[in-house]
Length: 105
Image (tube, rainbow, N blue to C red; front, side):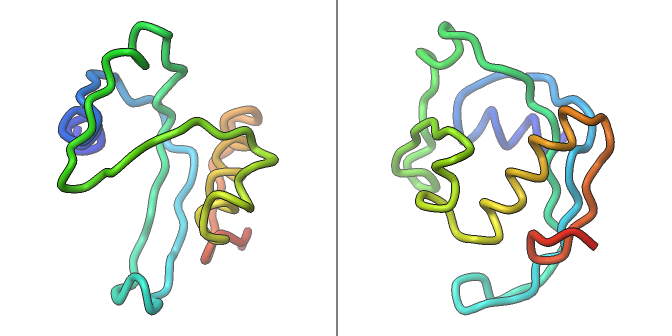
């Protein structure tokens, strides 16, 4: 699966992706000049051992940190914060979220 390959390339982690959580239509912007569908899949919960083995692909990722949901608005762009909150809700409810720019349709 493409998402599993990307996680392996960018974080050095081998994980099995679960079900679809979010489909989000993201319009083009100054920072992302193309529009398209963005998806989020359930990647599970990392163990302490997995976290300790994270190795960043430096050409694409400079750093990472974990953030609580109440920190999303101050640490992520608005549409990504909304998308991630929707993913957490979808994970809990079992119902995928369909969004446009992070807002429910």
